[in-house]
Length: 556
Image (tube, rainbow, N blue to C red; front, side, top):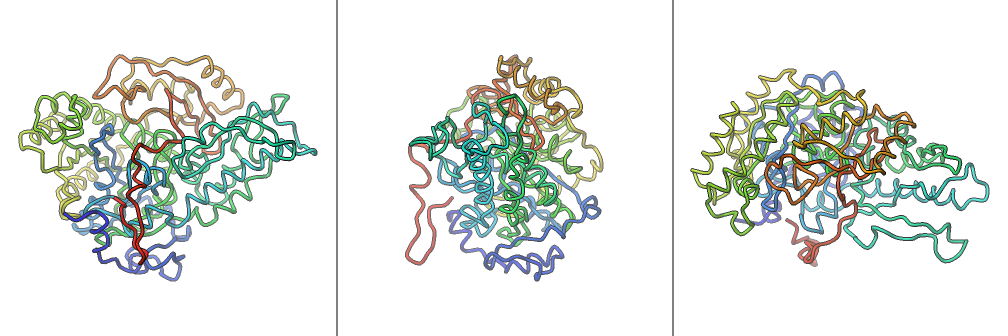
């Protein structure tokens, strides 16, 4: 079979104006980025129309080296719904350059279920992530300028500053650095570091903002640290929010592209799900709901992370009412959770599969906490046997659930028609079944305990002395009623990345709790969370090149 890049290049893209017309968007209102990309004005968001459309979330079992194909499923499902005559748009996050050049490679789908133009989407796209980077780093520069200033508005305690600079690249050497060296003219020496841009609070803010006014307010609410006399300092105290918002004036507008079958696709924002909320922007989802009958979106990683945050943070902020949930699984990944090694993924083994089904069980249970009877999408591989497939089907039937074989990667929308039909049935059964996991007005410890015990299956939660201190600080600042955005490994239901399957009886250990008052949530950190990844021994970047005609190769 052809590579993803070869398939993408062979596809016949329509001018983006024609894609816009499918959604009732006047082509003259588009802000064009070449022939096949455009930004859509926020004026096309209509709250009343948005309430009439149906919203479908695609999540997955716990990620494995085998890959589950959540993005491919989302794209093929949207194309399958369109084949059934349903006006459907798929809404996704923007890829970060870190994973593109690191381990993961491209993040625009695969095979015959891709969003196009694939090379552009995977690289700089329309510059949104670069704008987030600049806005973040402007605030960092203003903070250090305040420390250096002789005419201080207030005496900021440098020891309390947690705000870091960001870069959209995997670069482990920047995790911990010292700045301000070289004499008094170069600033105040202090320890700090870099995060990857997708981990920036500015990215989380962009993806939860409702309009420019809300964006500025949220940027102003970013907590910086304390003064020397223990008074809190926010970005608004530095008058930073206006300039930061100005840098994001174009980035706030959703990006319109298309799938390989010319289904409209809106791609906007890119917060990581093991750190932030892990979903595309609220504005992108609202735009799709305003211009379509059905909207397919995805949340990063598995149900315990991206889906939980989608439901408890994004849906609550944006007053969204999802109508169906899809859990993506593969035979290979389930066998991994049952103990199989990577070299055994393609070897038929019913025993590994039976053990691994416990992981699927937990994600089904998680969706039921939110009121859904999820549809299980099984991405099929040539190595899957009928016996293995039937085992998964039988397990779904035990829960009274539908399972559909998805062959979107190999057959595009045609390979997802069965899944689309079952999703339509699920939508009909759920006009208003959605319910959040917790009440945002509960105290923080109760919210954290609820997520840990229900979503992860933990026996309880323990807090370090630093986490207890952080809780006290957050309460004193009046932010206890914010939702919780848990930061933990995506590789396990627990906070230990080495525990596969469905671990039980474990304790979630909260190391510290960060305040993201601009984004509007608190971030309990369980275990060691890497906010600036490093490159692998053989990074994907080594395979990426460009020829003399300007054609990029090596993206996958």
